[in-house]
Image (tube, rainbow, N blue to C red):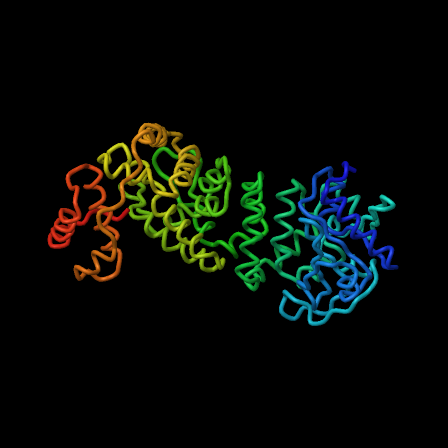
Length: 444
């Protein structure tokens, strides 16, 4: 075991205090798994025979975060620890929550957990591992195996279908044969899991180092087609042109792998950047996908809504998908429009998406290199001046709310940056002319 960190030392004190009060208490779950693998746990959970009210009496700072399940959050210094009472759960009628819960002993508690590698307990006072499910052997063999009957474990909570893939991805383990077979059989049930819970598992999988392998595993067991059919629709869709990587699906997975910084939601935008291609495919006289960015944006919005993402995250993903080829236009932009483009708050993510996309296909980074150099050059110039017009000004002119206002404002600021207008009166005159002529410029 590694030298105790402050978090581990404090977690040990939580166990010690519970023991002194006459209760069984151990480290439980992922922290034990990670310790045995030589990894630093991200947090420490404690399982105990103490009832929630007894835990609350023993510690000064507590929050009952899962009262029905006997879970109490204990705060010690700057750290938080989940302290859960040993329990046994009744049937799961909804495939998510047990119909009933009763408190039990340590062994019974372990037997209701999901996978053997997560079913280990550790006594930090005696430095002893308690293993009733063969978890240590599976850690040695690098195997994800359901505790008991796999089908029964997954029917208790269908999120476990995705968790199995996520653990296999993060730990570089394989999924045991019967467990894998149960996942394939029950994969359609993953649709019943809430968008929020699905999103969090996808997030953890997609930011993992082996995310491409994780997506392939999701595909192999049928989960990708259930949860993200927009992505699997790219199978068999030819890329055309200079795309030696294969079809749209293969290109997508390779793009995800090429990311240097797989931040969420950037990595989701990369996964979805070409979902509009199947719907816009034209094969003759040669393969084209005209307008796939706009179609893909709308599809990406639906995926984000399904995953219950925040409005800010939804808009980020949608903008990145819509503009994923925009760097190609940068060398032809007038200076004012280029400055606007380079000032966009999502430009770093867009550059990273473009880079990954290019490396997964033509390997042509000319436009990427141009934008990087332009940012460096323009970075030495003064910051962008305050816009001469606002949306309120345009509404006062009689324009209706909608995308037209954004297009007019961008065109006016572009001319401001070019130096062709300098006052608010000139900006208002330009705005009126653009509206009358019906040529406010393309939407950014």
